Length: 204
Image 1 (tube, rainbow, N blue to C red):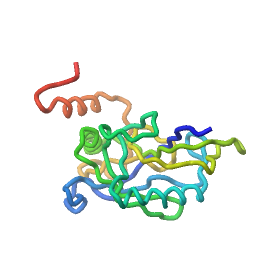
Image 2 (image 1 turned 120 degrees about the horizontal axis):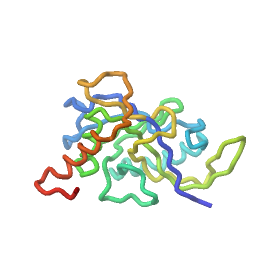
Image 3 (image 1 turned 180 degrees about the vertical axis):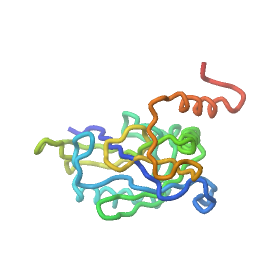
C-alpha cells in the first residue's frame, strides 16, 4: 500500500547566500547542495535503490525545466504541494557520484522569507524529499519499492538522510561549523518579526 514517504538530510550549501553573484535573475537568493544520497540506509531505516532515484529524477527534470519544482517549508502530511506554504523552487539538478545535487532559489513568499531569515540568523535546516510509495522489510531495513513516486523537496528541521543539513550561508557566521538549535526563542522571534512587520500582528 502506498504512503507518503519523507526523507530528510542536512543540506550544506556550496555557495554564499548573500553575495550578488548568487542571486537569481529576479534578485532572489540561491543556494546549492546535496538533496539526497542513493543506496544508504537513512535515519528512518529506509533504503532507496539507485534505479528508483535515477528514474524519478529523470521524471522530475520536467518540473525543473518548467519552473514548477516547488517545495514547502516543513513537511505537510499530504501528496499535494500547497502554494500558500511554498518557500523555494529548484532550478537545477545534477548527479555527483551517489549524491543528487540541486540549485535552489529561495522565493520572496511568507515561507521563503522565514527560510531566508533562519539561514541568515545561523539556524541549521535540512532538505527533505517527499514522495508516495510502498515499503518491504528486508535485512533489517525498509526497502522502498518500485512504485515510488517523487513529489518534491521541502525544507525542514530534522534530518533522516546523512549529509543534508543546510549550514548558515553568511560569511559573517563561523564557517565550517554546524549549528544546532535547542532553544527556539530566537526562531520564534524571527518568525514574529516577519509576520508582524506590516503593522498588524496575527500572533498573541
